[in-house]
Image (tube, rainbow, N blue to C red; front, side, top):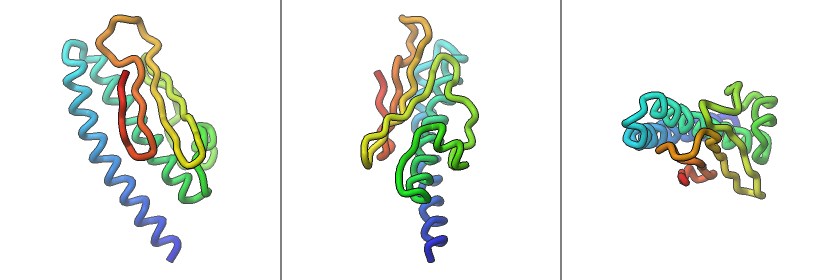
Length: 128
């Protein structure tokens, strides 16, 4: 019965992640309309953030807690090999039963791209 619940939970995570990814991709296209590479980077960054959130959820279900990006990789819950995309680098902040995945833009100031994109355990995105 335990494996069935894990499988059902994994399916729910994947379905929810796909829906949120599509919504975020639509807003990224609008934000980067004047820069095709910027649009590609923003869509990719949001996709990566969703992948990290899904990995955190799987990791928590299987291991009883959240983990750093390196822990997610070493446990096999995250297959993404890089910690960055374009000018964005990724980090995870853990706080008890909560986490926030952050993408920080180190590119030149003044671009239309958000400086920070983050998402928490409830899949709430924010941009600065």
